[in-house]
Structures are given as C-alpha cells and as structure tokens.
Image (cartoon, rainbow, N blue to C red; front, side, top):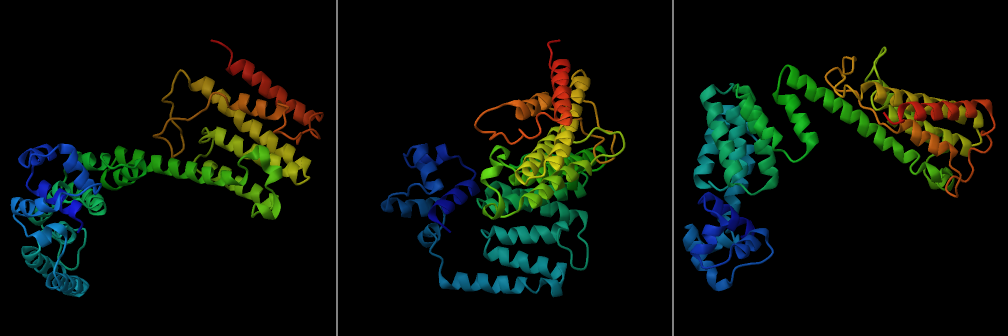
Amino acid sequence: MKLSENIRRLRRERDITQEEFAEFFGLSPQAVSKWERGDGYPDVTLLPALARYFGTTLDALVGMEDEERRAKLAEIDGAAKNFGQTGTRAAITYLKKALREFPDEYAYWRSLAQFMGGMVVIGDMPDENEMREAAAIYERILKHCVDDTLLYNARTELAWLYAQLGEADRAEELVKALPSPEDRGRWLSYITRGEKQITAIQSLLSEFAYDFWRYTRFASIPDTYVFDTGGEDFGYTYAQRVKILEKGCEILDLLTDGDDAPRYPYCSSVNYRGMAALCMADGCPDDAMNYLEKSAEYALLDASLYKLFESDPDKKHSSVLLDRLSVFTQQNSAADLLTYLTRDDDLRHGEYDALRDSPRFIAVTEKLREAVSQYLSPR
C-alpha cells in the first residue's frame, strides 16, 4: 500500500478526525489532508513517531511489506480458488483464520461477508445470525476501508443483504448514496419490491431507450452539416445512417402501445428530420418528404401533449412498461422544427430548396405554424 493510503486507513481505524490527528502532532489539518490524498508526504524524521502512534512498524506504515507476508497472501489467494470445491463452511473457517493474521486485508473481509451473507453459496445456506454478522463486517469495511472499488462493492452487497433481512429502509439508504443515478436505479430494482421496484424498473427501461436513441444521433449530428460528412469519410453510407436513426425511433416506440402517448416524441421528431436531411443529400427527395412528415407528426403530437398536460404534469402513460411514469413533452417541438425547415442561412446550404414549393412541404410548414400559434400563444 502507499503511505498516503496507510495513513488514511490507520487514522480511520482509530476513529479520529484529520483535525484531531493534526493537533496531536502540531500540524495543520490541510497538511494531513495532503498526505492522505498523496499530494505531499510527512517529513522523514516524523515517520517513526507516526508508526508508534498507530502501533505499527515503520515498514508497514510506508508499505514495505516483507517477502514472507507476500508469500502468505499468495498462499491464501491460491486456497481461495478452491472454495468452489470446499464449500461455504470451509471457506468461512479458512477466511476467519486468515483474517486473524491479516486483519487489514479488506478484500478477505469482503469475501468472508459474501459467504456469510449468502452472496456466494456453495452448499449450505447461511442462517440469520451469520447474515447479520456479515452485515457487521460490511459496515466495518465501509467505515475503515479506503479502496473505492471495495467500498462500492461493500455498499451494494450490504444493501442486498439488508433487503434479504427485511430491513428495506437501511437497504434503500445505502443505494441512494451511490454516486451514479444509473447505479441507484439499477440497485433499487434489485432490492425493492412492489411499486418501488416497478417504478425503478420502468425508469431504467426509459433511460435505456433514451440512451439508445441518443447514441443513434451520431448518424446525423450535426445534421446541418451532413453534406460535409457523408460517404466513406463518415464510415456509413447515407442509407445506412438513415437506418441507424430509424432504430433510435423504433426503440422509443417499443415502450408504448395502443393510444398511449409516445415516449420522448421530440426525440423521434429530431431523428426523422435527420433522416430527411440525409435523404436529400442522397438525392431522394420523395423519401425526404416522407420523413419530414413523420418529423412533423411527432413534433405536433409533442406540442399538443404539452398543452394538454401542462395543467397535469403528473399525467401517466398507459402502457404496461411506462404506467408509473409521467408523460414527457417539450414545449418548443413544433417551433424548433419550423425554424429548422424555414430558416435561410449559410448553415442550411439550401438542402430543402427542391421541396419548398411542393404542396406537401407547404402543408407541413403551415401545420407547424398553426401549432406554434395555438400552443405557444400567451395564456
């Protein structure tokens, strides 16, 4: 281990703050903080005093483990590979013995907690007393360990364990402290039941669909410059890029059925307008017009939904995969598409000039203007 990690770990094991530790040695808390971050190191003359303070050897403090320790740890790691044959009870006995010799090896504490808590079962299932002992081990890891990966694993496994023990509130508290929204949602779907689990799962499905759509956008981003990034330079042909954008719309449509409002209609509108631009670049104006009409369809629906639900923001979907989630709309969908189709500047390169006088193009823009007037007018 690094000196910085050892100082942080040993201070935590003594359950003292950086301020208390600094005061004992006549230092500033900022100096101790730098040591623990690895941004600075104690004066070499201070190291023996630090070792005595923590009740350890100088070699252990600075991380100079001897060959005997490394050999013994390698032996333990080798034995651990055979736990699949020896079973849960033998694994627990072996790990407890190893930890009496190496109580600072938190990876072994985690392995012990996994076997005692039922995360890993080879043979007999643990009883409730063992599961609670495992919970105490996980709590010890969370209090004293400084390894981020071990801390993450301990937190999520302890949440699962508390859920098995019927302590739902403690389990949720641990999960809600996870740094990533995706992780929080995923683990809530594992440890909860009933309405909370359904809501978590539906949120995950919605986020997955949105992310899938977002990643398809590379096929037309920025769609104002599609003519500069076509063909082999881009890596896909125009037709292939249209297919990619179609997939983004399909994944959103999969979440809904019947008369339910689509999920993120603005997103579908954006992809369809990207398909239209690609078709114009590929010399297919009829296909482009079809996609522009689809883009307008979703933009107009989004605008009407916004007006309908602005007085009821908690309006829920009706589809079985979304019925715990509110309908999502974006106020300026129609205005955005109208601006996209009618603005005339250097960025547009006049790609829609061949369509501007066609009845279908005029009908699309007129519908959008009407929607903007209707849905975006002052209340």
